[in-house]
Length: 236
Image (cartoon, rainbow, N blue to C red):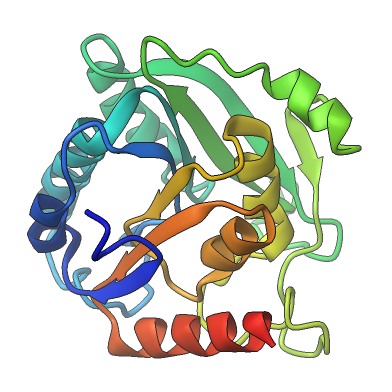
């Protein structure tokens, strides 16, 4: 296990998961492929295959997560109900649903493509945990000057920003602050954080700043290269 701790691994989550022992991870934070028109490795599948994969991804995540662990899943508002339908089915046997967190993006207003709908400026984040999760998230949030509510107002990434925490350099990139809230409130220093779909690496930067260990996985060489570059810059 020590040989993959604090590393970024190139590979498909299904293939990499078997390198991670059962019940060894303290917290999972992730933003998986969402089969919504973006071109990413692993998304070149039909709808039924995608959702079957989706279900299996989270069964493996459940296996590697400690009984005291938790999961944060970023998703998109268009397909969130299908994702919740699947996860709530798994909830009966594997997961305990805690919250639907609304990530409000004050700098973003996306078109609804209809004059009969409100434009949206949020993305959902599902918060699940295993049966023995016992961290007081509200107390940890308070200790770190974070509001103890389920609506998180955090600036979304854009290409014109100079701050590397929120400057877009990768499609679907999430800000470091989003993952920081998850990690700082739902784990302890020295814990092991897993992101099976690491993308731009924002979750890993948040883990490092929070003094947590990490494992990042992605099937994209671009994602792995970018994440490793950000880790190097963070260490300077």
